[in-house]
Length: 276
Image (cartoon, rainbow, N blue to C red; front, top):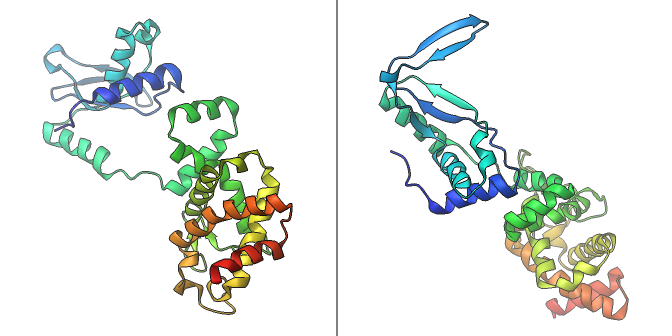
């Protein structure tokens, strides 16, 4: 009833053990289909006795962790022979064993990307974790976490067209236009497309993007000003519009830099070409 063992996962787990955090905080789930004896001592603690005739124990969940651990040992990492693993042992018939595998592996829901993004941002602030995640996670996953502070600035600055319009996971959608993760991904891609921006001061980029979106609002008021239109009707505040205008922002920034003019008027004069 289990998925086929993956050679890739085996090597990935060995890498995690030997080069990353190397901690398995969640339990391996085993099942004993035979009889067990429990000798209590106090407060539900005691000794679990597994008779020989009740063996083997069936590995319900954690097969790749075990395989990765064994692979590390066979590759010469002898210190993992004494690696401690938390274990939960069930004492059920096979049908419930299968049911538990299904529930653990099919019903569990991953953390929303927006929350994962915030977790990554916090981890990336610590040098020891930043190095690990930059090496072992893809740039498309780690990259947006580097720019959450810019998104939060646009969302918290009262003069920003995005003031309190950016939603984080768990918040209601009322009055919100877009998820924080969408904006963070777009800003990350802006830096990828215009890599020279990486040498610019972060505060300068924040102020530029604030003026940039003010200029967009001036040019397309019905799309960004609820008092003057119906933004929900326009693509500018949806993910595709945000991506397009944010990617463009990198090119606009470089044009402003070439003339050393980052005023709102200058940005608006560049964007006016779109309307023409």
